[in-house]
Structure formats: C-alpha cells, structure tokens
Amino acid sequence: MDRINDIFAKPERVDPLPDLYSIVIEQTYQRIVYPHSSTLKGYQSGSSETYGELLPQLVAEIVNNVGVNASSLLVDLGCGVGNVLAQVAIMRNCRCYGVEIRPGIVRLAKDVLRETQARCRLWGLKSGSMEVSEGDLTQDAMSLAKIQEADLIVINNLKFDESLNQNIENILSINMKATAKAVTLRQLSYARQLRSVQVQNNGRLPSNTVFRTNAGLYLMCRDFAQGLLSWTNSSGQYYIYSKFDTTKIE
Ligand SMILES: C[S@@+](CC[C@H](N)C(=O)[O-])C[C@H]1O[C@@H](n2cnc3c(N)ncnc32)[C@H](O)[C@@H]1O
Image 1 (cartoon, rainbow, N blue to C red):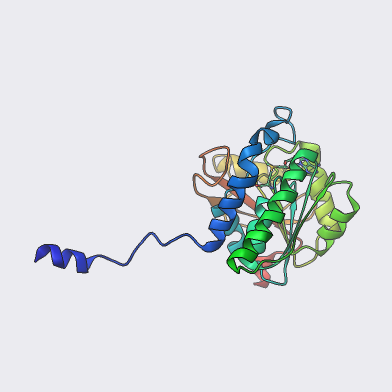
Image 2 (image 1 turned 90 degrees about the horizontal axis):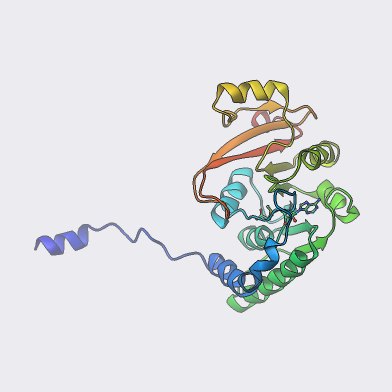
C-alpha cells in the first residue's frame, strides 16, 4: 500500500523531453560540425580568432532576457559555425544574420544553416531566415547595414583584442538603433569609473545596475551559471549595451 501511495504521490515528470528545436540543433551540430571540429582549432593561440561557443541554454537565457520576437533581426558578430543564428531563428522565428572572418568556419556555418533549414522542413518546424557572410565585422559593408537594422547584436568577444573591442564599441555607439541591445561576454572598454566599482566587487560589476560607458552607451550586466560556455565550466557575466537607459523605458 505504501508503495502504491508512493507511486501516486510522485510529482509529474520533472525531466521533460527536450524541445523539438533542441533536437534539430543537436542533430545538425553532430552531423555537420563534429566531423570537422579540427577546422575550429586552426587559430593562433590568444588571438581574436580563438574559437568557442555560447551553449544553447545561455543563448536561450539571453534571448529571453533581452527580448526577441518574430519581427526582430538578430546579428551575431563573429558568428562561428552559426550555432546562435540557427537556434534563435527556430526559437523566435526571426531573421538572423552573422559575419565570420575565418573562411573554413564560414563554409561550416553555411552547411549548418542549410542543414538546419532542411531538418526544420522535415519536422514541420517554422524558422526565420538565416544568413552568414564572410568578412571582417569592422570593414564589411553588409554587416554595417545589418548592425544598423538589428534589434539584438550578439558578440562573443571574450578573446577579442582590446582594439577590436574598442572598435566595436565605437561602431555600436554610432550605428545601433535607439531600441537595439548588444550583448557581449566581456566589457568593450574599461571606464575608470567602472574599474573602481569592479575592484570593490571582486572584479565583477554589480548585476542589474546601469552604468555609462566612455562611448556614451548604457551598460548593465547579468550573471550566468556554470556550464553554459563550450570552453569552460565557469560561471560568468554577460553585458547588455544600449543607447538609452532601458530600465527607465520598460
Ligand atoms: C568565440 S567565437 C564565437 C562563436 C559564436 N558566435 C558563439 O558565440 O557561439 C568568436 C568568433 O569571432 C570570429 N572573429 C574574430 N574576429 C573577427 C572579425 N574581425 N570579424 C568577424 N569575425 C571575427 C572568430 O573567428 C570566431 O569564430
């Protein structure tokens, strides 16, 4: 009797089946990227072209926090194999565009996006358009046009060098739409004002607090849990940039 009561007392399944979109993303990655993973490694150690990925759970967290809908344009600057583009195009059915400087990785990204679209058709899943171009994000005319149109710009810049990060901050401050947000894994520049706050806070910025950057952008950071990056198990922070203090608007 106790055992029967135990069975009926059990809560509903707590490990829900993964969403269909997660299956599409995972199968595509296994089929297209894994067999060519050596392509990802061909970078000079410590350079801006160092490879690593935001894992799907962190991408989902960012998209949910920042707010992306079907009419949005997401732009990934340094999009690697297009993992973020494919995921968000299925999650939100929005347009996704990425630029990547390494030709071998661009070829993989094109295959990833093609395969994702084919698998979506097979499963009857809707998705937004996905596009990748080869180029330097600071020079490419198409990327500049997309930055001007974007609603969310994702930049996994942890290994970008200081001048590239500084360049990106300038590009964003001039070209980003008033309502757009950009998410980075590392601050684009270090204002003296922010450095002293970080020193007092164990090297981190206090989360959910708005700061002003040297380039006049607004900056807020959020904490994320362990296990959400491909190259480390560490927890961390991501940074949300905007032209206006969005906490006052929302
Ligand atoms: C850490 S990976 C990020 C991959 C993917 N966006 C993600 O977060 O999962 C950074 C990528 O940026 C690319 N990259 C570096 N400098 C670039 C530049 N100037 N223009 C375009 N892409 C660049 C690198 O080659 C690398 O593939």
